[in-house]
Length: 210
Ligand SMILES: [Zn+2]
Image (tube, rainbow, N blue to C red):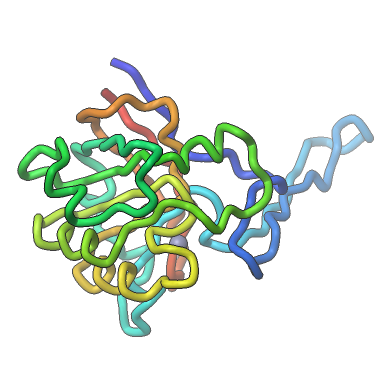
């Protein structure tokens, strides 16, 4: 049994969506300076790093993150490798892929994962995303959760169709995964977002066991 940590490390160096504040993670109390303990402060956008989107992100009356069903967030998952030549994940690609019938959780490893491996601190607009027709394909297949290895399931500058299709159907979107070390195949996914009241998303620790 092997455990893969597919979350990115949260630090002030993490690239964030253009316009979002940088992650603020800094130590306030130091034992080195005589404090009785070390203490650290954290402030970040809920869509920083590895995180989930709740329906409320794109639907005002949609479910918020503390109410996401845990049975979508944990369970069998399939990691699909897509070649570096893929610029956007389309329904046609998924249709001819190795995704097993009945897969309920799908994680797409694209060339995006290499961005995390490089330690790139600048937001990359040209990331690989999920096309609207692929989002529809995912919904048709009864998938409960779909994950991608950069900061949005949707292409930069065109967020609506992919997000709306997934979130309206109750599909949990996981973004900002690092799948660089994970072979294609079947795993158990555990993706646990922080239980933030009324929020449209939350940072998550995600692991694969397989
Ligand atoms: Zn998000």
